[in-house]
Image (cartoon, rainbow, N blue to C red; front, side):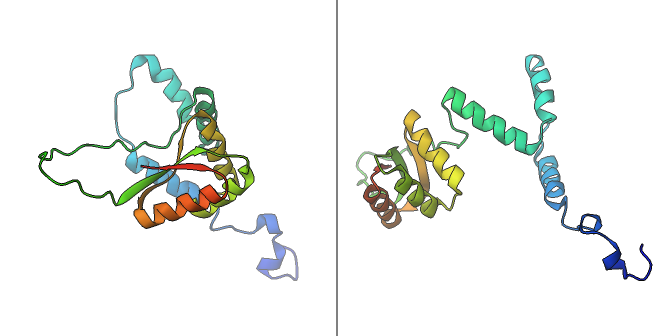
Length: 167
């Protein structure tokens, strides 16, 4: 420590303790350790799994995006509707929960991106990636929304020039 300075002044900005540094990474490691299930990895995949385990979280996120683009798939889990066993005489109930699907972007791509960001709370890149993925097929904008909210979302996106489907 330099002579005549208090403890805080003696440290440069890069030398100052950062109690928050590494906290998120530590929490992530703890969460991953808690969720880690011991499943037997087939022999043919062991080398690949070992290589993936060595990657950082950022590298894994980048790898996922590359694989999504290369194979035209999405890492977003798809809701699989399950038909309940209901007698045929039961009257059909009106659907109250919807999934908003973006089918086509239209000519006003930037306007659609703005509306998607507003609706989903996503960042610019995530909203743009969702819009770009529509070229490979319909994309889920929002799931499990009430009828009124779904209609409102549909109206906003259609005003921006997009084609929407409610399921």
